Image (cartoon, rainbow, N blue to C red; front, side):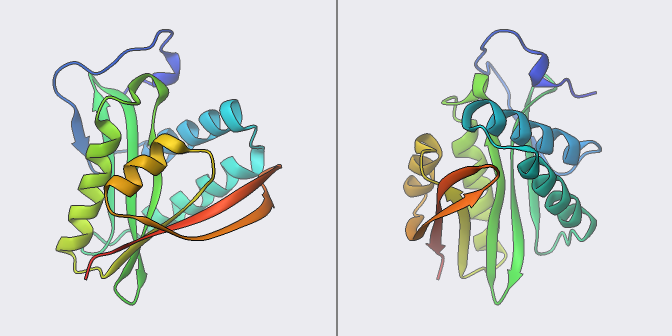
Length: 175
C-alpha cells in the first residue's frame, strides 16, 4: 500500500531505487491531493483548483487509451513522490498534464526522469507536438521543460483559482 507523502514530517531525498509505474488504484486521489495541497500551500489556490484537477484527471483515467495516453507515478519505498501524464488531444498532438514532484523529492532527478518518460513515450507514439499549460513562477519546472526542448509559445494574465496568474503555454515540436 502506498503511503501518503503528506504524512512525512521531514525532508528526504530518494536513496536507491525510484519506481515509475502506470496507473494503480488510488492514483486519482494521490495526484489530486498532491496538487491541491501543494498549490494551496505555496500559491494560495482555492478549492476550484482541486475540483478542476479531480474532475479532469478522473475523466482522463476513465477514457484512458493505452495506445495513445500515458500516466506515470514515481515512488520511493512505496511513498508517492510524483506524477506526470500525456493525454492525446488529436491531430498528432498531446498535452503534458499533472506533472508534480513532492517538495521533499524536488531536485532529486525524479522530475527530470518523469518528463523524459513522457517525451520518449510521445515520440514513440508518433506525436508531432506536445504542449503544456502552466503559470509564471514555477521556475524549477520551467527549467526542466526548457532542458527537454519545450519553448514558451503563449502568455496571458488571467484570474483563476482565486488568484491572478500569468498563464503560460509551452510547446515541444517532435517532428
